[in-house]
Length: 135
Image (cartoon, rainbow, N blue to C red):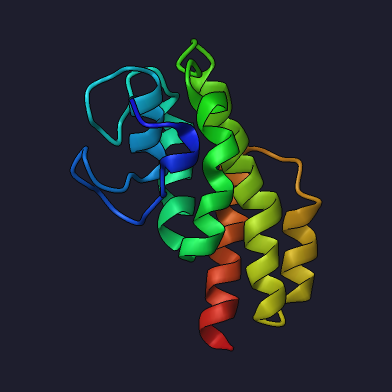
């Protein structure tokens, strides 16, 4: 078994004997077969980790290593709660960030403070999309 320090995280999928993406490393350290969909990991965390892994530079990606053991064992019945948390973070944090970059600060502020339902959030995001397309 390779030592944790010997693992180099890389973008994309890999053969077991080469570099690993963050989720392949999770499967490896959990003792599972080679996969980027570790059975021990929450699907919401898996999707998030793969997206982060693949958008990072090689140097940034290595900073994901400390999270590998924390992801092992997260398929624990709280998957829906985690997916909801990621969705709300996208609505209240990510979308406002990009709206501010597009100089749509009033919509960014509205989403950042939003506390309604997913349906109402969807309506706000559609409104933001129309404003962004018009800009």
